[in-house]
Length: 432
Ligand code: XUL
Ligand code: CO
Image (cartoon, rainbow, N blue to C red; front, side, top):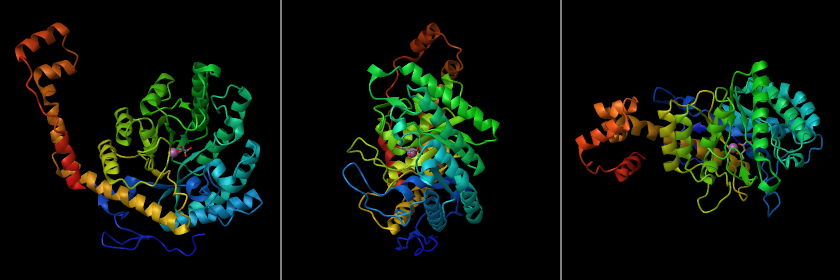
């Protein structure tokens, strides 16, 4: 599928070659390490090698050379070869997949059998190209058996099938040396409270995640388990609503030492937040794991999964990521799809090159803002009263309400201090 393309190279800012990087120069040092180490880019198997452009209103607009191959395993092999050819030529160090992206859907035992057969080939591909698995996951939302949920289904028998798929996807992730294992709970939520025992469903979700954690650890998985929050779509109410909700859930059920958060840009927007907000909430809890990079649409209320190009949004995100110390096992997975009317294989390159350049550029800008500008000192200055004897005694828990009243008397009416939001914004624009 991608045989007519050559290795994508860095050509610098002045290049007008759409099949070259203008900003992403993998070895270039930023804040003490190569760009590739900061960004840890991954290609998503599902959008890139399965997404055919169809939507609720129309048939496929994109065709893959393996579309008409009958045998699922032959199909999987052809897809695998093209996928690794694309990823190698693009030069991202990682990829991510759902079990069914790789081998197609079927009964959980058919999926199991096909995975067993394809895994040695995938391993070979990884070894010969040097591409690694950022994360694996199981698709527990597309098949009709999951229409009432997977781990939160009211029928226990469905849970046994979900668990089988989960076990096999964890096995695959371990066999391929995956750095993380992701849970996105597509159907883990509800449509109507009338027929839903919410407490029971959430307890069952926690039980399934606990089993998955125990199974993974017992079998040598040393990576990170990640939960990917999303407030709705396809479920009306999803239990993993946003980062704060998931953090509360993880702490309540004692899962916070093994799980972190995988934050997706468009999901943050659907939850009524910004991407930066979600990143900061996770960073505050020490649970910022990984990100699914894309771009939402502020005019509509669904998951458009566009390739990221918003330099303001991404710069602000990179500022949070850099300040939190960056990724460890996580990275930046392009959970993004081309528009329905982008139909050529070259479009897949354009989309990823543009997204990678946006992040690389944002990384450079964010590093400069943090290092060269007054951004940090301006923000610290806003809180400097907490470094005074009274303020620091308060933060240490040494004051009472009575003592606070004495201090209020002593200080007198506080003067008004500007928040200077426009100055901060000016500073960011200037560096961009
Ligand atoms: C759906 C979504 C998924 C997860 C993996 O909105 O983001 O693709 O990233 O299941
Ligand atoms: Co995602």
